[in-house]
Picture (cartoon, rainbow over the protein chains, first blue to last red):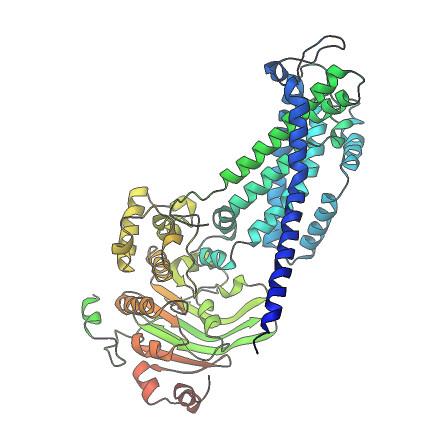
Length: 287
Length: 272
């Protein structure tokens, strides 16, 4: 190949600089919403954040102060219920998909998972209401947790599958050649190797459902009182934020801002944990 | 018992230990789907000897090797017909469990396959824990790890960092770690599938020396695309072509006076 004329090199450099500049601008725009939201929430919500917000119950209209202790507890309970159902099912299904990727059944499950992943959350909520709330004739934390689990499962299934498929087939072969049974190979070699990625996927799924509102509207419903029962309606941060935000009271509006800030902080913390939890346990090695 | 076996340099006419088949293959066919990649192979692998399988790429040598510990059948659509006798018992008999077979036969692959979540020490003893119920005690495992690493000529290089990640080792060290892992369960047969294909010359030499030292203790079957390697380390050599086992003979004879003109064409470099 002949050397391009000198003249065009300057032109290429200039075009390269413009393109790099454009992608940098795009990168800034991509992260800008998060920064703006964080700024707005701090500005509007930080003033209402106090110790009371985390420990006190909501106060009736007209009284100042009050907190969201019940909603915070509710969110924690809903996440716990959803995770205890969603993580085992999702990871199990993902393991199946990765190990039996070629079968018709795997193809079907993978396709349905993708559809479920794209399903509007309000639809999941209505479905859960029809099958979990209507038959027993009352809202419950359990119904809310199951609705959230249904949102979590396809997400966890697909990330688990992807992470397991990243494990080289040669590792599986090596374990089989050592006389590991298939199931033990899957669990102690393949799943162990993929674990950091699976944990990240699981935490991303938890962060995702922590802020879901629509599936809870007809299931967990919300509750103005302290409740720890899985059979009773329960409050959750997103529901409480929604209720307060559409109310006509300024006091409630600022509590809604504070609630949104707490929710965002929760998601941030989960994401950070995901980053740190998945670092290699070996200092000398690379992953 | 290895002492006098190692006394001679690894040249083709080194003394051959007592010839008694530990693994006997009898009219073996191996398939991927409808494609027959090993055609009617019959060969004995003798006790304590190193047998090299050579042949051009795609001739079925790796597949034949993988039939010896029932790894071939782990690939979907793969199947095997014929007999493989390990100490006189057919490993493909209906009552024989593939997992039991694999525990008695060690295998090392083309690329090193250390388990990335395990330390060096845990990698070596991984095979001992293949069956959760019968795992030896920690102290016994430590002892076996030292023994296996010494056998694999890796001990001096890793003795101070047994708890580090196995991925911190170089490629050649990783491959010797895999050999140590295969030896830790004290198999009588060791299968090597182009064990030096991904290694530099110095690491290759170390692995070859190791293979030569293990002669006499372990029955070794080694697939290699490198004829010089076969000549250097093996007692007997098998030549395969298009799925067919053309010739099996003592290495010195196969490389000097081959009995089949296809063998001669291959070893003189006329194809492959």
